[in-house]
Length: 158
Image 1 (cartoon, helix red, strand yellow):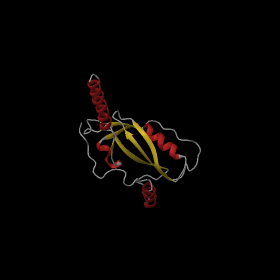
Image 2 (cartoon, helix red, strand yellow):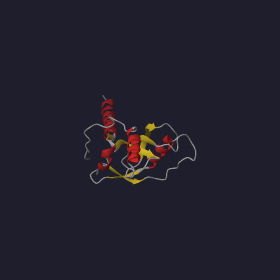
Image 3 (cartoon, one colour):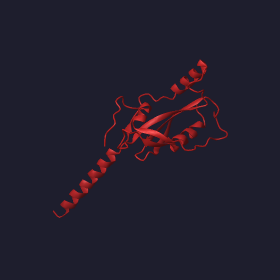
Image 4 (cartoon, rainbow, N blue to C red):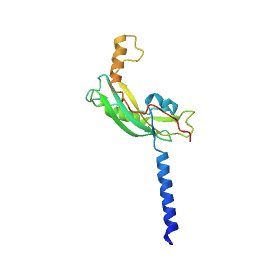
C-alpha cells in the first residue's frame, strides 16, 4: 500500500498535463474570423527568388498556420497553390514571418488554426478594369479551402 499515494500523485500529474495540453489546442477558425482573435502586427521581410518556375504567373497560395499565444506562427503548411510553381516556398516564408497581436476581445490569447490566401502577380482588388478584377477574383477562388473551419466560430474566454 506504500506505492498507492505516489501512484495517485503520478496519475493526478498526468491528468493535469493532459488537461493543459487539451486547453492549448488551437481553435480552428475561418480566415474571415481571424480579426476577432488576432491582428497582424508584423509581416517580417520575406525573400523572393530571382528565378524559378511560374514566378511571374498570376497565382495564389493557400497556407494554413497556427497563431500561438505569443502571436508567432507555427505549423505553417502549404495547402494549395495555383498554378504549381516556386512561389510555394515564398508563401510559406511569408506566413512563417508573420507576427500577431491579440484582438481586444481575445484577452486569453486563444491560439487559432486558420489559413490565408496569398495573391501573387494579380491586379489590385480595386483595379479600374473589370477584366482585371475578374482575373483576381477567379484566381483567388481557386485557392479557397472549402470546409476548413466549423460554421460556428466562438471565442472561448479564459
